[in-house]
Image 1 (cartoon, one colour):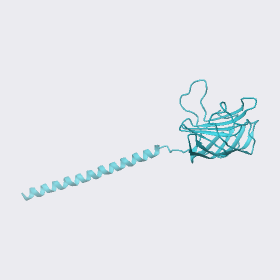
Image 2 (cartoon, helix red, strand yellow):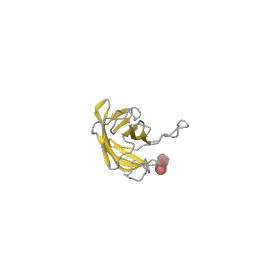
Image 3 (cartoon, rainbow, N blue to C red):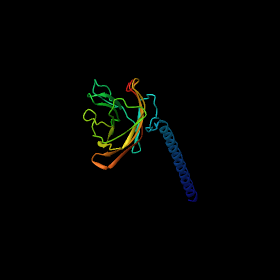
Image 4 (cartoon, rainbow, N blue to C red):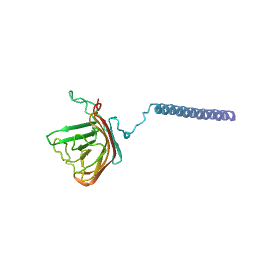
Length: 217
């Protein structure tokens, strides 16, 4: 009886030892598998690159950017399907010329085809170099509908329209070469929600550097 009891206890001890060894082996295999998967995932993760403001230049780099309430805004061309015949809608457009015998215009339109549309209007088709122009009351529409004889800007953010007001900001054209189609400058301004004057939008560190000959090529 004593021999059988000792034998039984010995067998039980062996089983416990084996079970512990199996658990340890399983745990090590699990840790190894987890490490391999993590390493593999880390190798395949694409880092998120945040938009950054382009440098301030005057060499026709076709750049535009600003901070809107502290957030970087960079125009983007439209992606996905577009109707044939008209070409792909662009994030930056420049409109300059005359639409009557007494009315000229120079317009910068910047958008990302998501939630931001920015419209900057100057009442002359050729801005003067190194001159700073002050923004005033915006009608909130494009030049073809209404064209005041002063600079103004309006901006659509998530469908909400913001308008410049008297002396609410300024734009300086640091480089103007009509013959080469080069226009560069900086701007900063504030705009009011057209339905809530207490809702103020602030645009800072604005810059643009446009070459009409190569823009949107």
